[in-house]
Image (cartoon, rainbow, N blue to C red; front, side):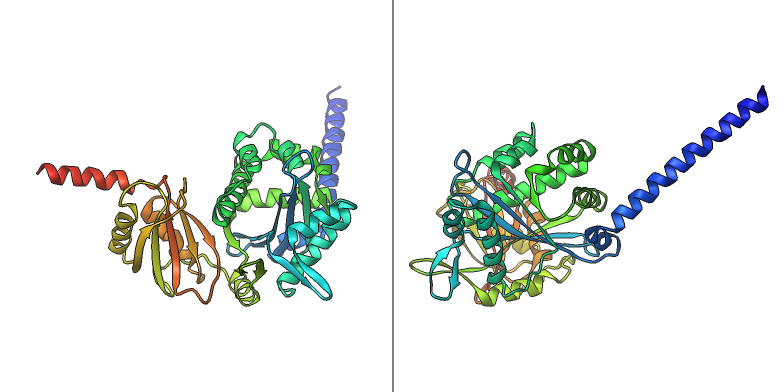
Length: 365
C-alpha cells in the first residue's frame, strides 16, 4: 500500500514539474518571439508613439500626441509632447494645424486620420524618431481604463488651459499617475488592461504590451517630460526645426546627473498670487548657489510650480525643485533663449509661509 502511494506521489510530482516546465518554456518562447520583449531583455532602447483623441461625445476637437523613449541604463522614460496647434507644411497644400488636419479627415475615416497624423508628426522631427510601435485611444476609452481612479479621470477630463505650460503640466501629471498606479497596484491593473486591450489601437500583441507594463513596474522608471519646440508667428504655430533637432540630440543622452552648473541664468516669476514670492524664492535659490538674474510677477495664476528648462539642465532643474520644495520640470529646448531656466512659483510653494514666520519673529525682537 505504501509503495503504491509513493508511486502515485512520484507520478503527480512528475506531472506538476512537467506542467511548470512547459508553462515556463511557453512564456519564454512567446516572450522572446516578440521584438519588443527582446529589446527589454537586451537593454535596447524602446521607442513608440502615443495618440489620444476626442470624439463627438467626449472632448471633441481635442487631441494629444507624444513620442516616448525608454532607456534601461538611465531608467528614464522620456516623453515628448507634440503641440497639436503646430502646422504641417506640405507641397501644394495649404498649411493646417495637426489638430485641424486630423479632425477634417476623421469626419470621413478615423483610421486614415490616425495614419496621416502619425506621418505628419514624424515629418516634424525630420525622421529623428523611428518608433517600434504605436498606441492610440480615444479619451472615452481612457476614462474606461481609469476605472474608479478619480485623479486619472479628472486629469483626462480637464482639457481647458490658460496656456501651453499648464497643458503640459496636465499631461505630465497624467503620466506620473499612470506609473504610480502600475507601481502600487500592478496586478489588478494588468488584469484590467488584459480585459480592455481592445480599447487600444496598437500594432503590438497583448502579450508584448503586458510584458512592457510589467517591465516598467519592475524597473520603476523616472519620467523626463519635454515640450516639442515650436515658433509662434502672428498667424500660426510652426515646428522649430533647429530646436527640435537639438532636443532629440539631448533627448537621447542619459540625463541622471545632478549639478548646479547652468548654461545661462535663472528667471523667477511669481504665479502664486501671494506677495513677494518671487523675491523670496530668488534668495532661497541664491543661498543654494543658483544664479538668478531677474524676478517678477507673472500674469497667469498657477496652482503648482513649474520649472522650464531651456538648455538641457535637467539635473539642476530637479535640484531647484528640491530647494523650493515643489516644482514639475518641463524641458523646452530653446538655443536662442538667454535664460537657462524659468521658474514659475505656484500656490503649492511653501516658502511664503516659512519666511513669513521668520520675519514675524524678527519683527517681535
